[in-house]
Amino acid sequence: MVKKAGVVIKKHLLTGISYMIPLIVAAGICIALGQIFGGIDVAEKEGTIPFYLNQIGGWGMTLVVPLISAAIAMSISDRPGLAPGLVIGFIANEIESGFIGGIIGGFLVGYVVLLVKKYIKVPKSMLGLMPVMIIPVITTVISGLLMITIIGQPISALQGTLLTMLENMEGGSNFIMGSILGAMASFDFGGPVNKTMSLFADGLLVDGVYGPQAVKFIGSMVPPFGIALSFLITRYKYTKMEKEALKAAVPMGICMITEGVIPIAARDIIRVVTSCSLGSAVGGGLSMTLGVGSTVPHGGLLVVPLMIQPMYFLLCLGVGIIATGITLSVWKPAVKEHEENKVEEEEEEADLSGIDFKTGL
Image 1: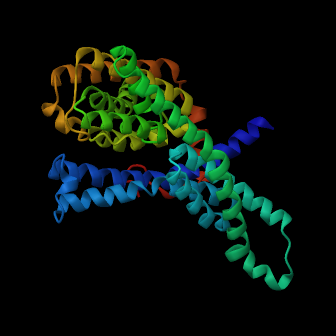
Image 2: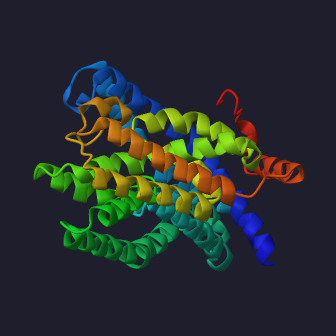
Image 3: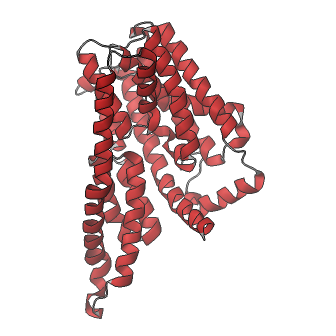
């Protein structure tokens, strides 16, 4: 029974990922192109093509969580779950629960819709209202309240605790502080923990403290490059879908866009998150110890020449990438031929058959 439930959950999750990949790629590449042609201050160059590309990509990224939430909900409950899924995904963004919150919200909406279908009975004359009004409204109210009151509270508490802990550590051991910041920057690939770390680093940047900004860079770039290294070392441990996702994740990583690894992390969340956090912790701790700093808050590899101790930064980034790559290569299980075939079948069942991973269409 547990195994069967796991297969069902994976199927719905794969559907969400299949809808999310094209959006992440399109939005991420737009941001990357904007930064490449517009520079690190592209957001200030209003009226230019790079500025518009950066804006388009940024707006696109805000849709990632609502989209995966809606896709999972629709996979579980068909079209009645689409609208509530979008709303709950938007709420997940607002309460800063990241893509994990969006995934939870998608499953929540999907099963609430099924419960409403099963237990809410209406006269035959009102059956036409069920999919367009009754189910969406009831599901949105129930799921929305649960997300805000139950799911949102622990996340807010976690963010407050992390900020307090970081503020108390300021001036403490450089390696320990850098390790914690690095792990946080990598932990949820742009989610609330990453945002908490970024808020802390940005606040210190205003005060002329540049070390945490460099750690933020490392934590944002280690995941895509570390996973890519693992793939180069142990290609047989990656599915076809993961291999294709890396083709977009790596160029996005150059510009500090970590969201490209979400499809890979979603399939093997414990191993991927732990390995990336470990590598970022090692690189971040070393960065703070060696006195590396960044006077700019974003830009990825494009702004390395502007950093304090740029060669040391590349060294720390390389150490973090190697630590992640080796850890993941050792820990990740091999994908056997029959398992690969099974994954392909699951992907087809999850509506992945409509995407050609070679062309992205």
